Image (cartoon, rainbow, N blue to C red; front, side):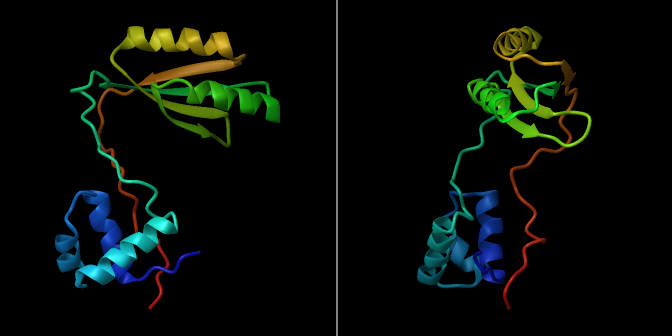
Length: 159
């Protein structure tokens, strides 16, 4: 496990907010010169702390403004079914998150789509691929908070 310090946390906070921020600006805000700052960023990337740098797109501008949460229950609880389910779900581009859950729901999906008709199409394709016991859909009415920034206050830092 990589040991992080206060400089690393500051760098990560800045990059989470804007991965295109110039190195000189990151260095100035963190309080390091450019070379040590760049080495830290490279170390964080090599260690897998920084997995990748991406662009966050506007969903409304790209006709994916509808969010649907899909709760799935199944009677199948075996490795083969899980593998088939994972393969099926990863093949649907409208599925942006998929979680295996503890409790009453076995799997929870988050979809982004243009409308209810697109959800109906997804639903029909899903049930054609997988045997499911129950599918419950919940349409989000309003997005109150959505972020890609992870809380870094829980990171155990070295001196």
